[in-house]
Image 1 (cartoon, one colour):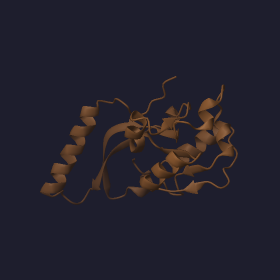
Image 2 (tube, rainbow, N blue to C red):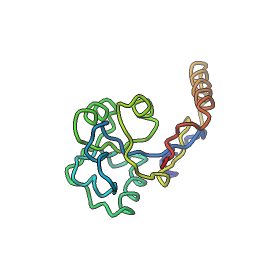
Image 3 (cartoon, rainbow, N blue to C red):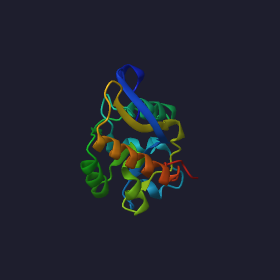
Image 4 (cartoon, rainbow, N blue to C red):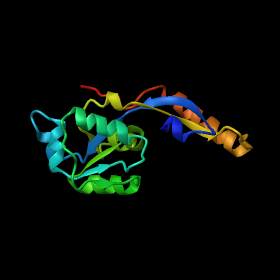
Length: 163
């Protein structure tokens, strides 16, 4: 994700695509059985949240406020994908995470997205490089492979909410 303007001084950002934040749970989570889901329902569960300073945190906090979600007590702040994946798949926790991090888990049915419209959390994803330093051969090859992968995805599966 692209950081804020005050954090990218001396850096160049190349936009590749946009993606949203999602609320994910294990496939047999009790929240999935609610007849009328409300985001407020997550307040009774442990929630894995982005930590202070995470690029996605402000948009997540705005979304929670917009839905009347009280401050989450006992949430776990983590940037560890391995921990988030394992903990969410084995407990009743709700994981708030960028779509791209768990796209494969969702496609394979290991995690399920809660029915929350998170379009307002959409943000740019791309390549960030130092603006005053030319990339070496290996970095150039990696950057081109990343660009190609983003083009091949063609905007599919960026996590837009489907009702």
